[in-house]
Image (cartoon, rainbow, N blue to C red; front, side):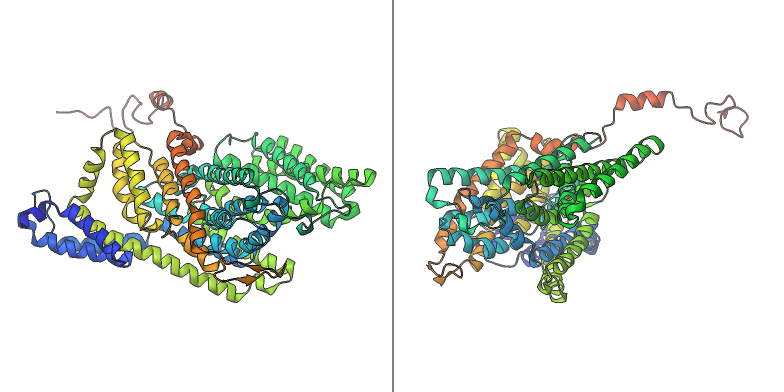
Length: 627
């Protein structure tokens, strides 16, 4: 019996961990206790174990080094930075402003509020990276509005929960940081690879809402005209003016970036958005604050900027970034002057209230996205440095919001204290799980568990296809019981070596699993996003504050039913990533390409001082003699 146990310690240890987790023990302590108990068992059964398994008590001395390795891991510093950034932005009211403004923008369209929730969910995901913050914010703000205007409760709750989970796949996602650390890959590559799949998943959510509004019009009605604000004096909404501004800003951004070495991929998309945002912001600022004098002022500024551009181009060509920035600002000033000229001569407004409001609400999060993701993608900052800049930027934005709105609740010491405490709790949660995983892996690797898992997975029929099908099914089933941190710390270290041995790109593999693990938030009945939404959705009948009507509560069953279509969409997204790998692997194009043949040619013609001289090395009379 002892020999049987000693020869099968790895599968027994893994099965014991599953039992511990199903019994409800905290994950960190279950991992650590399991590792220590089986270490003792392995040492006692050492005489009966195979020759390649040789655990002994001195091996425990490696444990402090593993713990210190976790604590000194600079990559994991990005977790508290991004968490703090998201909490500050969420509690300062940015999410509320975004949902209100974008809801007004989409409001008259059938399903407009649902589109607004998806759009804002993607934007919050790119600025917060925290699922709980996104789901709770949108549940508190948009769910009462959607219920007020007759949205189907299943659609409303499903779209809010699903849009909140975009924070897991759209950078700066916390799970992508952990995934990159566990797979031994760059966080920047993981972010860049996941950016486009995150946007595509947002688009699939919008397509689902469109189909529902087409087949069941009453499930997603548009807002009545009386509920729409930001109107022009003649009663129009001024949406087409916003379209012209977006088109102009995007074209300027594309033209500017076309002059650089950035040609495609997530970094190109981010930089186009950033340059377009800067152009739109300058137009809105000059329109609001310069008034009637903006035509002459902006034309004069544009002339000065163009002159500075040509001077730099001839006298200091190395300052390429400065020249590109001058191009953007000059184009924005010319457009602003054109807007003022048209309004003065024809009375037609090209900067409507809607265009101005959307610009001022959208610019802060978009600039923060560039500050964080843009600097990471173009290689200026590491993820940890980008997270630090994002944390500082969120404080600056919140303080500016407080001053502009004259609302002390936007930013104060209590808000800062609360965000810091929540960040410390989440960071401690992550570190404790990782420490427990290190204790578990010390024993699991000691009994050759990683080799057992690798042989088990690589021997599956079907090669890469069979491996991917099995792994995705395994992660999907485990997501019913484990959250994404637990999956990342327990399962990913076991799957990564097998995937690498099969020749699978680990960044693509990590993004694919991140999309799959996203279902862990949406699985009825254990999905955390569903729990977050349940905590803020009305549980009893209530009186609507605006209409005074008596509203029915949202049942748990409606939340669960609403989540199922979005779980299916997430699985479809997994299939899309598998069938079209370039959606993720485009991150390789942004790296430096080295031609080995060119390197060899240069090495052949490279003179070696001293060795190529007739006398050999300097100071020696001829080459050394061998006697």
